[in-house]
Length: 550
Image (tube, rainbow, N blue to C red; front, side, top):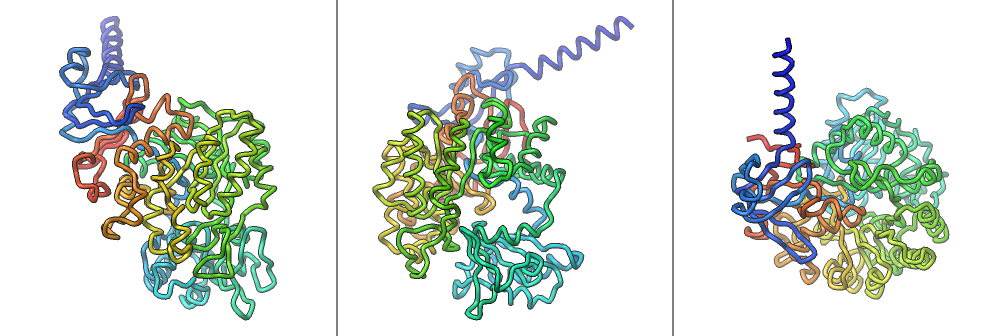
């Protein structure tokens, strides 16, 4: 009995020693960005989930002679990538909803009919991803096309940007939307010449319909978040900034954290529209920078999106001269909401796409900057997409971060000129201008508006082309990034945007061992190939949490 107990103790000690033994990954082409620029290495050592060193294999084997050796098989090693702007629950829900991204109008209708077929008559048909800009005529669809499918279900399909939706008559009826329904503040119910709702709802008008959709329960929210985590890890993402969550989603996050069921780092922003906002702000930040769940910011949307003509512009849309877009909150309300957040010590992250929205937001952030005596909140402008050229230099003055999504430019390139005209494009999607003045640029995708794959973002940042290599030479290529800058945007500067750069973002000693192994060396292949690079392994705190199947 004594011998058995001794053997058990010895075995457990051996297992513990292996778990906490120094690991040395070799046979890799490693890269990360530091204050000095891009650094390369051929081996990495870590212990207890923290980086010990990077460098030459000979030096590290001498320094750590008893380390467990892990062969990187000639792959490239990068810091774990961080998406600084996505919608995590929505990404997970894509598995349960209809995805009509890149489909024609006819294909979208066919897919909707097939998706609805097995559903009960009263069950909602939910989906997203349509984009009328890709269709013949580029016109918004109407409820007539959905009604012609002759299915009894209420149908609600969100546009690719999430700032417009398309409903059938059954959905409109359940929501109580008819010819007498007025437009809400910051929203538009598109109506026909006869005054009937067409089925297209813009921005805040979408809430009128979505309030009629049965809400997902806590367990479904947790399942959606878990599904999103799995997708993210397979794409090499070890950090996600969740751009706007309600208190229900926050509760799902908190329960997952308590269950130790969050396998990467999540930085959710509390949606300013949440009914429990004041109580959540009063309760203060949740977690800490070194924990998997860290909440210390809010998300406010100032306007809509360019594709649905909801982005607030100073001058009319070139392709619709009677429209200038929408502010989702009155100007004075935007300021009071931002002040409410900063009074409670929260960072503010403000969605602003049109030049009018960006100008108003910068004015408000300038007032906050003065009032808070330049406290290091690191406020962010999410998208910063269409800017007055003389507004861009205000970012370094106010200590602001530009949270931008490279694939938006390559998706919008065929539409932005139509909406804005050439002159206003000078301050649009202007990554180089921001970087040259020293502004930190946090890279993201805005998934599921765009695919979550960060390699798509690195590719778009460098080439200013879509994945079909168009246009030749890139769209407005003078605004492209170098690959080093792009990598930094999706690593170190994204970490800075969540107050975590001292813990993650690169592979300096003492930081968490969050890294990925990818199949090709992105610094040696043609930039046109970057989007095709696949992730072989993803590691978080020295634990391999994803490995690609052979």
